[in-house]
Length: 424
Image (tube, rainbow, N blue to C red; front, side):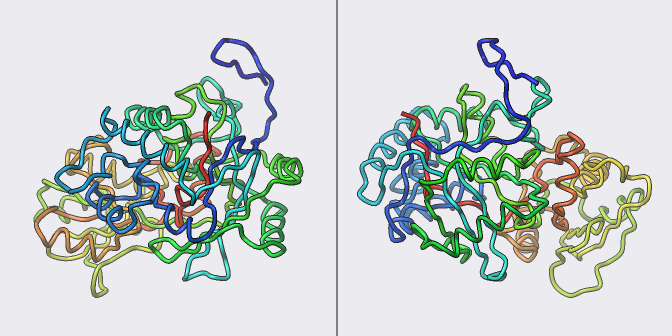
């Protein structure tokens, strides 16, 4: 198998994912620095106002680089993401970050990255960080690629990240890649390293997850060979960040490879505007068994093919009827796809998942919050979905299909600003 580079020159590549060290890294100097600099990814926020508010609490955070249009004195001054003014501010702020005493520069590093949720202290998510190769991304032009994307790419969104990368000369956000690790050898090696060594730094995030990083400068080939046992990797979070690197013609993108068994997928819900809510449950009976939810309070399903609907009057339980989806098609088996086709498209006339009448809400907002948004009159109804399972996610990847838009919310998420790849 060969891959042709941008110049049309064939280049052999191995049929396994590859991890390379970060050649020039900017890292937090210690745990106090990680507290000050670390931040959520740019796409974890519901609004620019939320970004601005977090910057008021932690003005040194990397959000001043990753979301520069929000790094302003007042909310009224929030600008346009990707504007020339915002990109110039990002470049200036990144230059300051490079010289900040809370950062230090290292060459040729990998890192072990552990994230421990407070509700699961005995089962941390742990992975190996470094640089993945863009030429290994599977595309129609590169069907033998071993890094499998599972989500459609919105070119404007990827191009916006690419412009930021060019302006700052830095790769800021880590792409989360899942690997099968069927033998458990990778997870065992990562956990053994964590037990034997003191973390280089650690920091909590806004949800109380503990992020610990062990910077690795020795035995890099051993780690690289261990990962090379994996037949493929799956993009769990960061499709647009990896696409931005490929769009720029860069050889690498910043990443962490996590054994899939250590990862968790949380619900990804929806709010809908401008729909005939009073007649909605009756209209849905063509494709769903519809019953009033028997429980009290807001309803967040736990099992696939159980869907919650709040129409401002009551919570309803929807179960898709036979024939509404093909269970052999891994993508159609996912409730987000069923809802898009059978509720949004057929009943509400919203055929495009990108329609602005749909607001996608990650697991950092619960069903009670969605209900309050409907009760306030800002939205007509809310739809809650059970989390996609890792088995469903991997099956979609293995069938070379695309996940329904906004169907996986992986938690916890890798933190931006702890390790940055400098590109010059």
